[in-house]
Length: 311
Image (cartoon, rainbow, N blue to C red; front, top):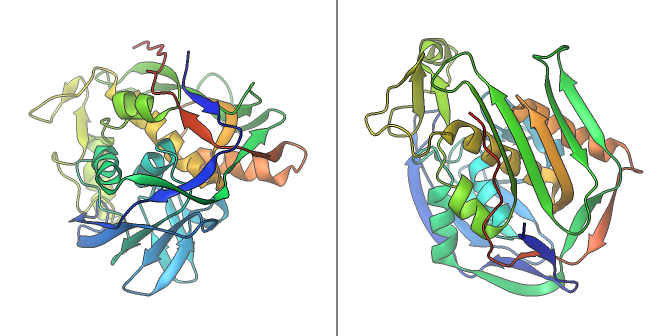
């Protein structure tokens, strides 16, 4: 099962050029304009609220909300729904970039990470001065929510080499989703082929409640899969029969990209979400004996992921 391999002398990477975008915010419902832009070596990924002129580092300790999306904050400034663009940037090995937006959240586009993958492809990725580094997990870390067989939990384990592997199981009462499981080794190719197209989803019964809470104001069948019991309400149906677990795994990649550098680790989780993903990073970095920085960049050899799927 091939994917990321250590280059040994990996240079930091950024975008070749700035590329603009515009779209609707899933939760705010407003039109948002922005761009993906190159950044200086060592800057990492930064979200720039151009309307407020506030720059927020894309780091786990800047997460201020995890209700239905991951929200970063600095002072009064907020940037929501960062997980899809973070997943695409991480999967394509971008170390340094600026995500510029003129509103409170990143546009949702079609609910997947594929539009961000397209933007990155159009902008291109280039090496720059400075050596990349990874975060090697040295011992297992676990966080959980609840007890018994229905508990949600997430773990990070040491792994041999500069690779990131992930395995996730989900279980929903809606029979259109049910129980699904997926495992893969992350690479640019595996992300593009297996995760990028998977869209966010919700239950029809939750839509009214979410909007009453001021959430999902921009949601529609154009940017989310809506499930009602055994039915998928979107006219075009699903992009794959297991699109739900694929999207949840996409979220894992995006949320864990807030570590600030690629993780050399194996992730295993059940029923995890944005909150638990963030708690996992907080638990990892709270224990200085559980991780260390290593030199070299994880680069792709272009192979497909190895998949295990059960529905």
